[in-house]
Structure formats: structure tokens, C-alpha cells
Image (cartoon, rainbow, N blue to C red; front, side, top):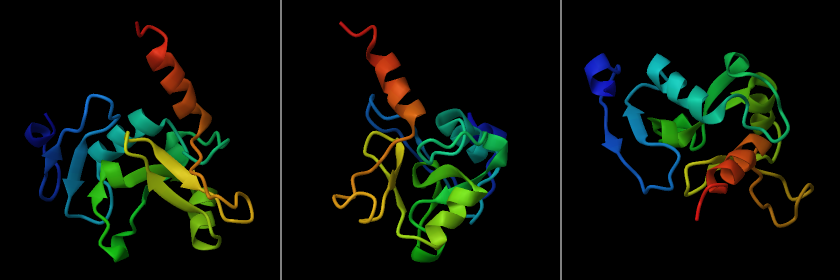
Length: 136
């Protein structure tokens, strides 16, 4: 579907396990294109910083592994973050990671959590609960 509608740059797909929340959609460009933004919007539903309620339209696509560090413009290497939280990454010890199940998380500095455990936005935790409600 994505190839037929055209992404700028090369496209590679890698479907992950049935528990994964995303698929790999990669371009060679630095900035996410409209189709990648649509995938990020559907997955993240706004800024991914815990407790932030900024809607997707107020957010940037942030590379988890930075472009300058050979990070790919891939939906599995990107997350939505509002301008304030995107800039927080540049001026603090906060970091971002992608969990193995395809959910983006924020890693607090030692001053907030000495163990530096990744923190999910509440909407991801709520979705996990919803996903298990009807399991047998």
C-alpha cells in the first residue's frame, strides 16, 4: 500500500511479531514524509512525553537514534514530541528509546530515577490494558 502510493526515497518493510505496534517504514531522507507522519500520528496520538497532552499537529517527528548518529528515518526510530519536549532532549539528560514491542518511551535522568527506567505515556499503558481485556 505504501509503495503504491509512493514514499520519497527508498522504502524497506520489515513486519515484526504479532505483538509489535508498528512496522518498519524507512526512507533515505532526513525528515519524515507525510505518510510516515500519518503512521506516527496513528501510533503516538500526540506528544509521547509522559503526561504531555500536546496533539499530533503540535509535534515534531523525533529520531530516537539521531540522524547525525546514522539513525534512520524509520517509524520504528521515530516518535512524536512537542517542541518543548523535543528541545528538552537537547538541554537535559532525558533520552528516548523504542521498546521491543514498538512503543516509544522516555528515559529520565539519574536525578529523576537513579535506575533510569523507561517511562511510557499513559495512553500506551491504557492501550495495553484495552488490548488484554478480551484475552482468554
